[in-house]
Length: 235
Ligand SMILES: C[S@@+](CC[C@H](N)C(=O)[O-])C[C@H]1O[C@@H](n2cnc3c(N)ncnc32)[C@H](O)[C@@H]1O
Image 1 (cartoon, rainbow, N blue to C red):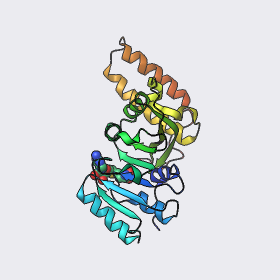
Image 2 (image 1 turned 90 degrees about the vertical axis):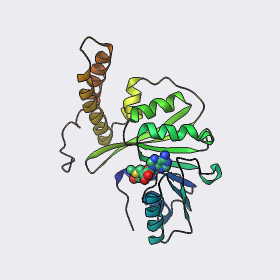
Image 3 (image 1 turned 180 degrees about the vertical axis):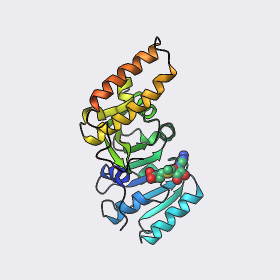
Image 4 (image 1 turned 120 degrees about the horizontal axis):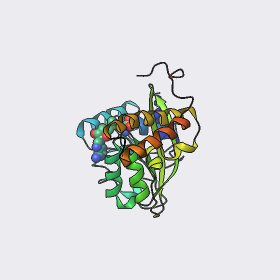
């Protein structure tokens, strides 16, 4: 049976046993196929915006003999997904802005019973700010390394409380309290991005001061993860 990589395995670990799952932007439907075949969930909806990926999903679902348990749906975000079809909604492998837009359009996600499992590829800071400011609480967040690259996955629930989002929270979320090697590697990656970003600001600007403070802080938090000894296949 197909085994998911660390990134999809981390997403899968946040799915509740027995949940009805919607995988948005499913592409080959690797995640729902694995969840159903492993027995963690009974059924799923695999959705994608485009016909091509959805055809790949359908072929993979049939190859794995789970077409009676996984339905494919052509859908922009959650537009064509009924709220009764999904308890746990996975949105993985897309940019943070796109994920925030998808969440914002589906008003039925504003329900504490629904779990959102989010894995942004870019602009995770934008997504964390969006969640804070729109009543979604990040309950858990973990990092992983897949093929030498760092990723984060968040488990979120709506509680209707809008929160202030500090720059530190926007950039590293709950990983600041994690302490694992994977979290340190993620923080190190963010620090390297900020070191590129700071070059665009004069040293007398407020943006420079803010970024310099974060770079220093993140340097301390990621101590021990600066080199690639544990990840020889880094790219
Ligand atoms: C990089 S793939 C990610 C596949 C899988 N979720 C993963 O994490 O490995 C992104 C997929 O999202 C789909 N996608 C992009 N925008 C979307 C949208 N607004 N609604 C649904 N799917 C979308 C793309 O067609 C593509 O198949």
